[in-house]
Image (cartoon, rainbow, N blue to C red):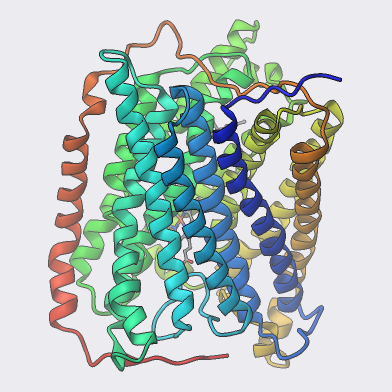
Length: 549
Ligand code: HAS
């Protein structure tokens, strides 16, 4: 029997795997709820025992959008930093474990309240919908726990710089630091609304809540939240994908520059989620629409960089013409196929985002199921397929097992199921949204009225797509369990790419953290100070909390 060889020091492997167990349990629970809700929306089933569509939707959104993503991302970033810097020391590991347990306790607390129907407030938990105080305390714990993981990454990066003076820092560690900086600065917004507005209100210490202020603080956090999901996928595309295809990173500097731009511009844009909301001066909405268009640029740079990586590798292998590289890619390798399809989906997903952000066009799509289609393309396909692609090598490399040929075949099946399911479901969502179909509407709410007939075919298509996705989820869980516990022992590669020799060395300015944090804060102050003063000064009487379901 082969010897188990782990890609990280034992303590770090355990820490990362602890994150992965929670992430994949969340996938199982959350995706099952996804199936149930598409079946309810299509009228195929009626929920038993007084369970509401909105309760299921809350579990789906919170567990997939907040729990799965946060645990997977932190686990992956800790793993890639440990791999490229040489591992964590005891203090760093202990802090990360404390963060992990805080997040887990917080998750369990919030989940219990949702299951008891005491927190049916959807993943955005907009006031004046009110949840049990333990839901908010749970969320606060998740956020503070994640900050601890972030501090560990900052500390490890700084220690690498100290121990290796003059040396370039590892790209994956740099990217992890940028992602966590963005996360820490952004999550201050949601922490403030949860701690200072929602918890006192849920405890009954204050009777009312300033709704617009809480929504503004939420969306100050909400857009960078979607980049917190995206950036780890970009880490994989820039720094791991080239190795999987046998190539080199097109440019280390370009990758770092992209991440810095994402840090600077992903926060001062939250108003693009509030374009239809009264109470915010249109001038400031317009400023944030412009800033949103600016934050599209680093994604365009990523597209360019990925094309360059693929093309350079293709030419090395003898490809000719503009798209000749397509023939040279390792299509039968699920570690490549899954993230690549994720990239492909980001072309319509990103285009949809630009439509959403385009001020007047937002009036057409806002609060329609188009938006749900948009985020199923972006986070549920681009990001998730990339995360699945990561799991195929990360899990066995952490457990000292191998990603067998049979599992690779299953992983290709899972990628196909996900692609087909999501194509059907998100196309139907986009189409129905363009016709004005509302998002977040239960079948039980409109059964019997004219809408039932109008939306029927679209909801049915979503249920079919959702069922295929459910199968894809089951296959993914089987692969995960196999790779974690049953695959043959051995050594699985943790792929980390090298930059191309032709590329320029990255400038030292990228490590000038006070500069980048300073500009980020200046942009936030510019975009938010005046509108926030305005919102607070002109606040109407606060709203009382209520429960809809
Ligand atoms: Fe979004 C709503 C605008 C990106 C997620 N978004 C949401 C919500 C979520 C979400 C969850 O302006 C709903 C929130 C809620 O519950 O209310 N979004 C944007 C814009 C972008 C964008 C401008 N969103 C994302 C990403 C997400 C995400 C990424 C998750 C990960 N979004 C909005 C707006 C709303 C919104 C409004 C509010 C709507 C409303 O009214 O409520 C941009 O960042 C997109 C830029 C992306 C690109 C694509 C680059 C393409 C690449 C792939 C290259 C492919 C290759 C392969 C190399 C410009 C990098 C090629 C191979 C070949 C063979 C061709």
